[in-house]
Image (cartoon, rainbow, N blue to C red; front, side):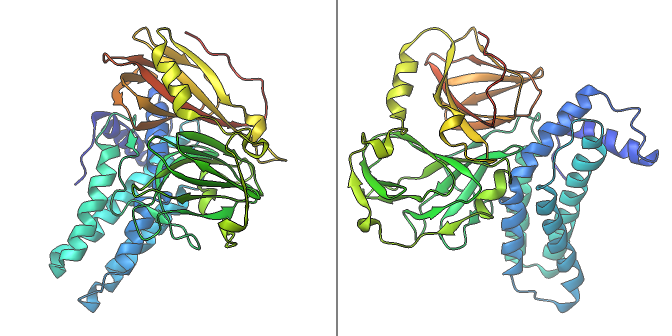
Length: 408
C-alpha cells in the first residue's frame, strides 16, 4: 500500500521481527537505530503538518453513509494519536525501532486503509482527495533514503497549521528535539504576521530579498527593505507588516528547552494593539541592534572560496531563564566539503547553490531552499556539487557554550 525505500522497508521488517519475538532487540543494530531516528524525526514534523491537517479536513467532510462512522472515527483517532506521538522524545537506542518508528508506521498504514476504504465504498471525491494528499506527503518520507528535504517555496495543501488568534498558516519544515524551522505562509487572507509574543519560547525571524515592510520588536517598529535575521527573546512582542504588493513569507526558527519545537502553537499570545502606536525607529537603532543584515552576510560568504562557518546570532541573545537560546550560523561550503560538529540536533537550510548531504554515510542531493535535520550525535558533512557557491544557514538551541568545534 505504501511506497517504501529499501532503508524504510529494512526498518519495518526489523520492527516486525522484533515484535514477533516479544520485542526482542537482538537483531537490531546501530544502522537500524540511526535509520529509525532519521525517519522518526522526519515524520514528527507532521504534528502540525499532515497528521493535524488531514484530521481537520476529514472532520469537515460530510459522511455520506452513516454505517461508515466507525471507520471514520477510527481514522480520526489514529491521526490524533500520530500527532500526539510527535510530542514524545525520539529514543537513541533500539526502542526507536520497535516503539517510535513502529507506531508511526502502523498508524500511517491504518490511516491509509481507513481513508481508501471509505473512498472506495462511498465513492466520495472529497475523501479520495484527502487520501491522495495524505499518501503523497507521507511517501515523500517513506519513499526516500532517510534524509528528508523540505522546501520553503510553497504551502502544501493539507500540510499546514492555522494559528488560532493570528490567522496565519504555518508550514513545518524541520522539527528537532526542542527547536523547529518553519515558514509563515502569508498568501491567504492575512498578509502580515500579527503582533504576538511567546512566554516560554525564543525565535529568529528570517527575511530574504525582495522584502519591504515594517518589523515589530518590543515597543518599537522599524522599516525593513532588505534581508534580515531578527532574534526574539521570550516575553517580547513581535510581528511583521507587509508594505509591498509582493507577498513576503516569513521563515522562522522557534525553540524552547521548557517546551519543544511545536510550542509555537501552544505558547502564543496575540497582542492586538495598533502597530502605528509603537515607536518608529531606524533599523540600525539600539532597539534593533541584534538584527542582522542577512543578505549582506550571504553575499559575503558566496564571494569566498574556502569552507568555513561563523556564528551570526549567538545563543546568549535570546536565552532567558530556562528557555535556552537559538544560535544561528552561516556556512560557506566548497567542493572539499564541511563537516558539522557532532552535538545537539541541528537544522540546516541551504540558501544558495547545490550540494551533497551525507549523514552517517547516507547521501542525498540538496539545493537552495532545501531544509533538513541532523539528529543529536550523528555525523554530517556537506559538499558543493554545482558551479555556484553553496551557502547554508544552521540553527541549534542550547543553554551552554561548551560545544564541539567546527572542522574543515
